[in-house]
Length: 111
Length: 138
Image 1 (cartoon, each protein chain N blue to C red):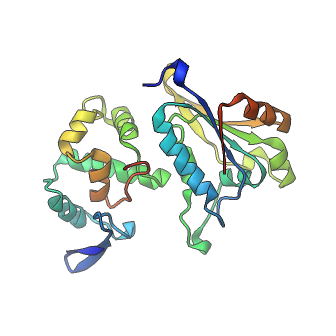
Image 2 (cartoon, chains in turn red, brown):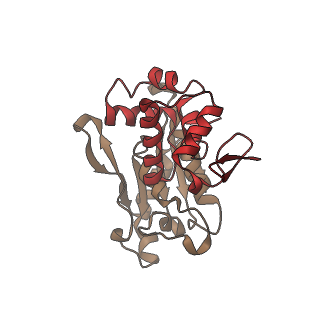
Image 3 (cartoon, each protein chain N blue to C red):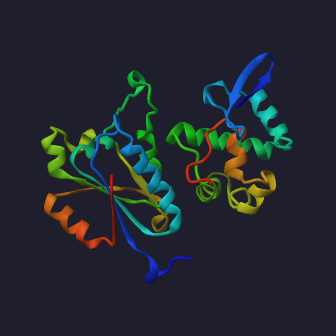
């Protein structure tokens, strides 16, 4: 257990860096988690993070990578809904790493 | 990769109400994880299990996560066959309209939305169970 601290707000996280309370998430916090993951957030990164947050809002789960690829393809087209492109953005796994930045729990079925 | 010869027919049977015990949530998670293995997956709802699909669930009062929205993601995971037993609904004073609408997009028909829930009689449920290779009961 530890905590992120940004602009005077303390956000607790678990041993792997996932937020304990998804309600405390904000974009400054996302930038900070990204930095800790050695990721410099670009528009393409935000597109994935925002998509994951919308998916979670609608279904209460973070999608598995396979589902993320499929749904990103539907929404943004083949170039962005591409496993290689997603791994280029999030080298340690798009669902795993992007979910962490999005403040969501670790995806179901993710080992 | 799975092909016709090593694809098994899986049936997950849900018998318990969604909250109070962890069975319903655990079952849902196993279904989602299992969906990655490209098997032929069906999910059945009998007895109090039919309550899992009730629309308008509100868990604020019991401090639990409302995971009912997650059933609507099953279509994305290619779990498209949900069977609800008619007698179980009737015995609890429920009708089909009390349940959430759960759909999937049919990629063979220009992503038309189709219903995933099928209502079956007890005798049909018995037949379904006998037709599956692997039965997991929750």
